[in-house]
Image 1 (cartoon, rainbow, N blue to C red):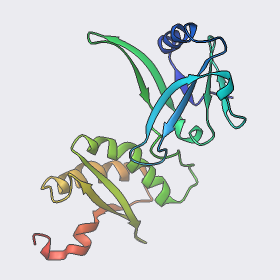
Image 2 (cartoon, one colour; image 1 turned 180 degrees about the vertical axis):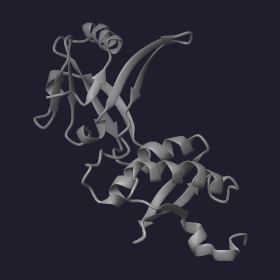
Image 3 (cartoon, rainbow, N blue to C red; image 1 turned 45 degrees about the vertical axis):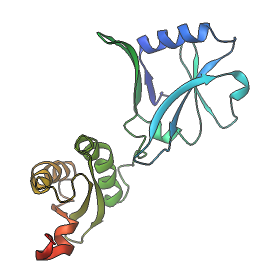
Amino acid sequence: MSHPITITESAQEHFAKLLAQQPEGTNIRVFVVNPGTQSAECGVSYCPPEAVEATDTEFAYEPFSAYVDELSLPFLEDAEIDYVTDKMGAQLTLKAPNAKMRKVSDDAPLIERVEYVIQTQVNPQLAGHGGHVNLVEITDEGVAIVAFGGGCNGCSMVDVTLKEGIEKQLIQEFAGELTGVKDATEHQAGEHSYY
């Protein structure tokens, strides 16, 4: 069984050192808080033997095992735990690209696959501007209707962001399935969006 979670060698060494100071038999647990939501966070904690649940999945690494609870597992697909040392010191970095949304299979309905790409690829780029985009619907003509929220709402850059960035990205990703991307407010507000 391949590990959905990559724990780099430097992170494994770091955990092994920490675990050496813990009672014998202590391993680590990798989990997601609020899985499947925008506020999902990946975390790591100590896992003493008595805390292992029957429904946990064990991933054995050389110096220790990582336990993952049933709920977090699908959201930790492609996650990576690294231990990085730079000028600021050393820190553990947790990347869980699917924590906010579990991976969607290739034969899932188009709307689910588009939603997945928006949540995992588009929104992380918008997050730096305090904005996010939600998929409202996909029309029969293959146009994805999206709603901007957060800092994007009413921002004059929305059209540029939408056309240059998001539309291009999604049409490339779903060539032959999606024909365009439109802003939902454009649909509803008509001429009066400035009131």
